[in-house]
Length: 185
Image 1: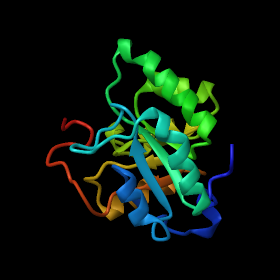
Image 2: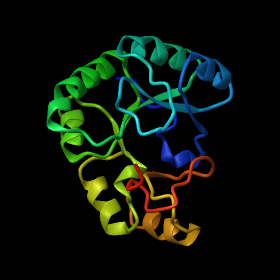
Image 3: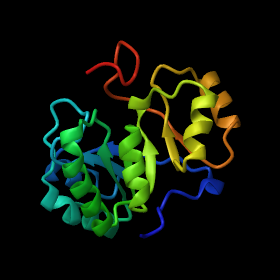
Image 4: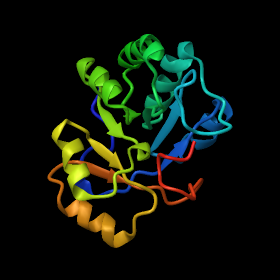
């Protein structure tokens, strides 16, 4: 698996990430974004988004990598027992496509991603709001934590100061839930 372009935290560089919903949105960010995130099939929490088909995953990642853009696959939905076989197929395709990381929050899905050797980021759907939760996810191998959207800059600084190597991410624009992150379906 290729090393993530933006995973070197010593550079202290902000990664500009954009959501994708189709090839038109992918073409719009080429040369502009450092990373993209997108879902395939029904494994995406972005309302009103057209998800890509599983067979398009290789093509999307290849286009991104050819333009030095990290490609992150969202699997940040509530996953029911009968959906794990599809998730298993999706994660196998993600390995094959050399996805840079999966964005995930379900504990069982995290375990499956780890078994496949995938890099993973913890979704804002996990509602990470304190340093104890952040340290737990760091201890199980998360490379990045996407913090709860409601946190203040001061709260973000405190959480970051307690982490030894895990990156943090926060939303700065776009859909903002009016309840608690990860609990507005």
